[in-house]
Length: 188
Image (cartoon, rainbow, N blue to C red; front, side):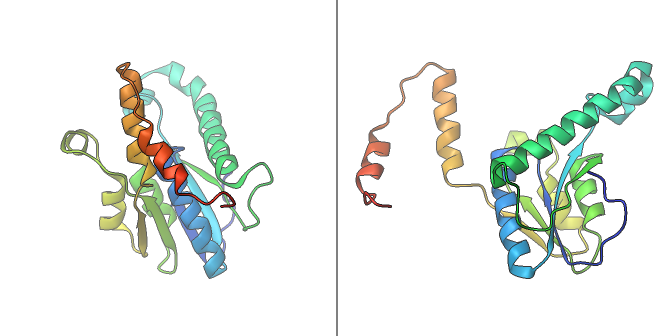
């Protein structure tokens, strides 16, 4: 999973966390890599639970680092399987797990001027923006290469609304879904 030697080929670096937004970004990054004849570098950044400072304070964390790293690797491979299927991608792909926060890890990986950094640009409310730093904003402000911010799928809002209604035990209104299927041709 680690890049052992630098590659001189063009690269498309993409942040992958396993979220729906990152999977959308991975699909777009794969398209860009095909179009450019570049290597695809999916990167999953991870930190120990509680952050690096908490991991340094306890001796038990040193024992668990291998497990946390294995879980990060499994999550990255799961995201790749989700997008490309069991057969993998026909692209030259160099999956990478990076220990650290996502923004600096992505900017540090996409460190060449001819790289393309692809990130998911999810919708975030004011409260979420105030409490958690934005990986997309970090990358846009600090990357030395072009950055492609991929907006979330339009279906993401519908999925989030359905999940909220389900959580609260509210009835789902599926009439609009039925109308959409009625307009789709049978052989589509």
